Length: 449
Ligand code: NDP
Image (cartoon, rainbow, N blue to C red; front, side, top):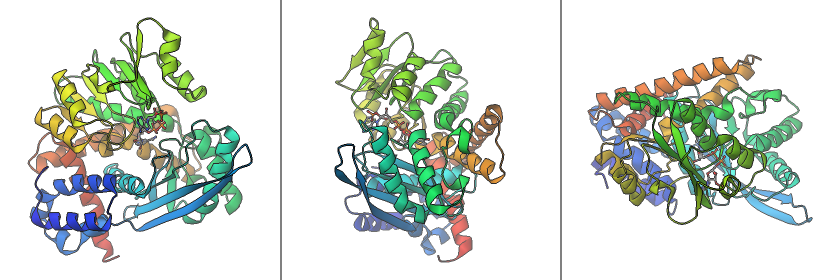
């Protein structure tokens, strides 16, 4: 474990005492505090003003009951969450996750990460996150709709285009956003387009939002590779997951001349040395909502479907974990390093364990943390809010250009901050410090609130 400044260690101890059992949240806070030693050495006022303690405490946490009726007429109960973490830079902004693993600790870790990520984009958005332990898998459209309507019936009182603006995340895509927006509109009697992002194009969505997280992560890794005089061209890549982030990461890697040979879902992974056939993955995942095993079944010879071991056993030059938190362990990292990995870019939030990150950094592997690399999604959500506010709709090219330039800004900010604080090439340190300073400066200006 990295050593921490004494005063920061005391703050960390208090965070652990207050948030007992919330492992992911504690892990996320520890990673940020471990980066801040060099900042507080220069700026002790951040400690004196309890700014760091305040940043580690969410502004508001909402937990609520979500009752709904399934297709058999049974009443089901789920738990809904919204953690409004920090609004120093703008309205709370961050996605909703529907997955059985969702609990308060996970939502808090995601909200905390989101605060720094949003700061890194340079756009006026605060940080928040929410969701439910509802599992959409295997549910009919009618059941998903009734769940979303019930969820929004409570959540709506806490939202607003100037207050809190949710979006999608795991288990929440265009279908779920559509049902939730419809219910919000009905309850509020207002067409408040910018209250949710990730909307369909026919009702205020932004072009390139669906693609933005994956495309953005690929731009970030391309910029990192350029610092070593190389690019995606001709590189073998592995992308975990096969959801929104994974699909559009694979699409952009291919456009940049790379070859993705493996992707996964929570049941297993497929290897296709000739290059993953994206049209088939989209058909299976976006249209038929089936398992990735279908890919191997349909493709047949030359394709393998593996349920044992880890997708990170597949040799590659570039690895982009794009499924979920802590999916890439220290053991996986050692295997990737032994196989000669050159760069790792996190499409998901906190997919690498702290041990894995240490292994990559010690081996000199280029490593892009999720809070920087996957910022393209929320950045394009902010562009969707801009379009809604000005009653405008931009072209795909215009939106993608803005996304590319924001990702360049995020990359360059992380790299320059790492240089400034004496850790060149350490994107974790660069992202944590740059994100923290922007939020802390705004909070300091507001006084003690
Ligand atoms: P999706 O629901 O579209 O896809 C998630 C993918 O990850 C699926 O293939 C899913 O498989 C897999 N997965 C989920 N949980 C697990 C698990 N416990 N073990 C193994 N695989 C799992 O979600 P997104 O693509 O939107 O999100 C992926 C990651 O990216 C998350 O960490 C999210 O927070 C992050 N992210 C997303 C953004 C966005 O714009 N969507 C923005 C920034 C970050 P299965 O179908 O089997 O569950």
